[in-house]
Image (tube, rainbow, N blue to C red; front, side, top):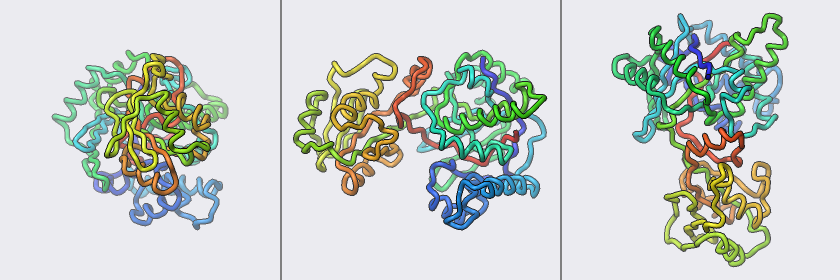
Length: 411
């Protein structure tokens, strides 16, 4: 039983929403973030990355920087940049990328559901990455970046979505510079708000697709505030976190590819011979984009190969059967001695949005080997989370990214 609630968001005025909306804080490095805020001073990235308001060598984790984020946010609320919804509601958030549409429900999800594993995770978090967002949420008194959740499609929610899109006028309708179209509708009819809440209550599992660190940070802020609040009752605003929930039928996971900086002392011939013990290896004349499970592309010595896993290294296990696990367990660990891919400097990860040409570029510059992966399926993610297991690092790449600044949840 999932407690997914309507809420009264702070959101940008309709006429400036396209200028305020920003990609998530963690897709930019420090230099890129500064350049983007200079390009568009109204960008919410200025609040998400407040170090952009200080000299380049300023300590980005200092108390003054987080206080600046708080001040900028609440100044923009006071000056009318952001308006406050009159009553709790849900929001319908539609994104269109390359003709593919995904539509989510913007809501607040329960910290207790996260703690009780109704909201399921598939990835570990790093304390260092959590610390920054904990400080940011706590300082701002608000959650500004939504967590990307998914659920098994529900007919009741689908009917509401279809009705709203067919009959209502969007409050936002714009295209960002990367060509992604965003539309937002308000769902405030009492019968539809109740229907959505009841539909989620009927679900025994919701899944984190992307945003594990933001989610863990929101939960830790809630715990901190509960401890300090003599009237804590599990039903305060801080007990819920900003989310966008998508049906599984509309989501697409892209490939998350690997590039390697050395062959662990082997020659290319020796490495290729080892690979042939585990995979059928077929030389190809052009870049290889895998077309099915257990198939990979490999770029070695400037040449592409198509790899198909031998039956004896495939697995029906929820984790070991993932393509990224097959590569990890049969190549990266035993052949290349990369047993801790999250921390090993000899491996890097390239999101599928960058294309296979990025793998070729890396192998001309700082790497000697690349693997093009077949994307993890959303139901493989569900199976891992349902089993209470964790995926290898960098198993999933979701596109498009959720924009920050369109919805703010005050805690």
